[in-house]
Amino acid sequence: MATVERILAEVDRAADEIVQFTVDLVRMPTVNPPGDEYESCARFLGNHLRQRQFDVEYIVADGRPEHTARHPRVNVVASRRGGGGPVVHLNGHIDVVPPGEGWTLDPFAGVVRDGRIFGRGVCDMKAGLAAAVYAAEAIARAGVALPGTLEISGTVDEESGGFAGVAWLAEQGRIAKARTDYVIIPEPLNVDRISVGHRGVYWFELTLVGRMAHGSMPFLGVSAIAGMTEVLSAIRQELEPALAGRLTSMPVVPEAARHATINVNAIEGGQPIAGIQSPCVADRCRAIFDRRFLLEETFGRAKAEIDALVKRALSRVPGVEHELRDLMVVDPVQTPHDSPVVSAVERAIGRVLDRQATLVASPGTYDHKHVARIAGIPHCIAYGPGELELAHQPDESCRIDDLVNATKVLALATLDLMGAGR
Ligand SMILES: [Zn+2]
Image (tube, protein in one colour):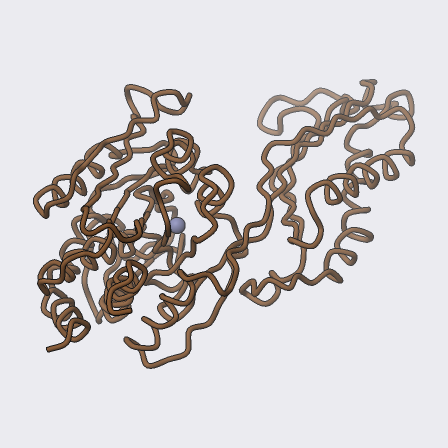
C-alpha cells in the first residue's frame, strides 16, 4: 500500500479511539472564565503524547496576572523530531466557554449519539485537538518516518484573548518564525473550509460625565445619559449605514460579516438599577463598544471616525465631558492564499473528501493574530472538524465523520508540508 493509503487506513482503524480521546477531553471542564482544570487537561495531553515519543514541555504563563495558584495557566507543547525538514505546529486551545442555559444533556458527560459527540467545547475545539493528536498517531502507526518535526500544543485562554496561551508561547520564543515553519489551528470552520485569517477588532469604552441635579428639576443638571443617547443615535443613523457600505476583499463568512460592524456590548448610567433610587440627574454614563474593522479600513481610520462621531454627537448636549479609552486592538490578519500551508490543506481536502476546499476568513478573532503578529510566522491557517455555527451553543456537538476526515486531512497536510513525496 502507498503511504497515503496506509495513513488513511490507520485513521479509520483508530476511529473509536479518536472518539474516546475527544470524550475524555470533554469530560474535563476547562471552563474559561475562570480557567478551570487547565493543568489536568494539559497533563492529560502531555502524558498521552509522551507515551508516543514526543518530547513534552509545560510552559506556565507565570508573568501574566491571570495566572494564579487557584487557576494556573499551564500550556503544553509536545514535539516529535524526524528528519531535517520543516517544522509543522498544530495548535489547539484547551479552554471552553461556560455551558450557559438551554442544554438537553449534561455538557460535560461526553455523550455519543446519532453519529455525534456532544458537550461544551467539543466543536470549539476539543475535537480539533483530538484530530491533531491522532493525525500524528496515524502517521506513526503507518510506519512513516517524519521528514520534519511535528509539534502539537494545547494552550489556554483563547476564549479570553489568548494572552497566557499562544501569545505567551510566542513571547517566550517557543512559537517563532526562526523555529516554526507552518502553523495549523484546528478551529471548527467546517471540514472542507480553510480559514486564512480574520477581521480586526477595536473594543473601546466611552465614559460620559454630566452634572448632577435634583431629578425634579432636570433642567438644572446635565444628563450623561442624554449625551449617550446622542452618541447611540449617531451610531444607528450615521455609522451603521456607512459600515454596511464597506466591503472587504477577504472571504469572511458568514457573508454579512464581510462588512464592517459595530456592537454595543454593555451600557450603564445613573444610579445602579438594583439599588434604592433617589431623584438625581445621571452624572455618569459608560458604554463598551465592539467595532470590527476591515483590512481595507485600518485601525487608525476606524478610531478617528469614532472620535469624530462622538464629538459631533456630544456637541448637541452642551456640558457633557467624555473620555474614550481603548480596551483592545487587534489588527486584521490574512495569510497569502498561495501560501504552502493553504495549498497543502487544499490538496489534502481534495484527496480525503474529493471536494474543492473553500477559503474563508473568520468574522471573529482567534489565536492566528498572535502567531502572525508576535511570532511573525506568515504561514498560518485554521482548519479543523466541527461546524462553526455550533460553537458556543447549547447542545454543542461534532460529527464523528467530520472528526475522522479532519484527522486524515491534518495527517496528509502535515506530511505534505514536511516535503514527503515531493
Ligand atoms: Zn475556538
